[in-house]
Image 1 (cartoon, helix red, strand yellow):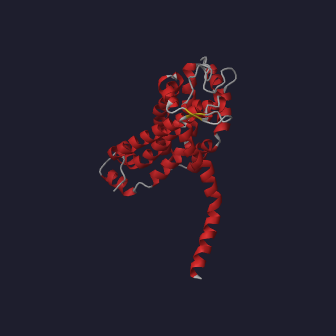
Image 2 (cartoon, helix red, strand yellow):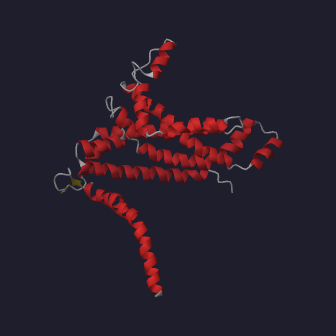
Image 3 (cartoon, one colour):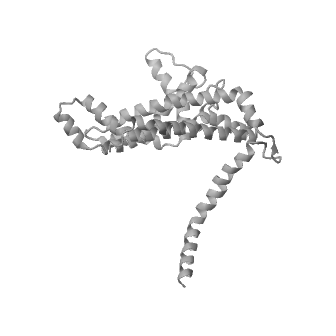
Length: 294
């Protein structure tokens, strides 16, 4: 009887887990494992996959200049936009951590843009960066400056997307604010008694104690940069002249525009390896600059 009771409780537990387990197996684990096989095949969805060995990987690494260009653009974005976002997020959180009347309203205002869906934000910025009727060029014209064709000029398109990325810095700002609240007050009190200036307290107490949060946002930012897709897809479609052809966008094009699933699967696994390597490197460096307080 006791054994039947355990079995009954287990079945009820599995019944509650069932929907999630089904979704994980069918929509996550199965595609994940299948992509390993497809990356060694020529597959266009319509016809059965044809085994080609390492031909997809060989073509990617030796005969596809757009693969290297998209990878270079993605790395450039990771090395520029992620540090810039961290600096702006930390700076904003330090400003919004001050004891000023109405601070909750200011925090809400800066946080709101980060909860707007990426599609909506992209459509708004298509208008803001419009060279003829956009807000930015309109403001520049009032001071006698002729603004560039932000999204239509290969020199400016990439930097326009970097600029737009700062729009959502409020999301990381909230995490930095939570980190600032965890810094023990007695450290500041001791520093004040020793005569430390506000700038010295910032560089010798606040920033070192905030490094675990900075490290978290750095890892998440790098992973997000390697998967940067929505904004480039909606605003530029990879143009002009492939200047915003990010890796994920090129992967999407190979998979769904050209139905080259085998090639796209090989790209996906290279991306997976790159993200794994960069994340591992970041974890190896944390011992040198991340302080956990203890």
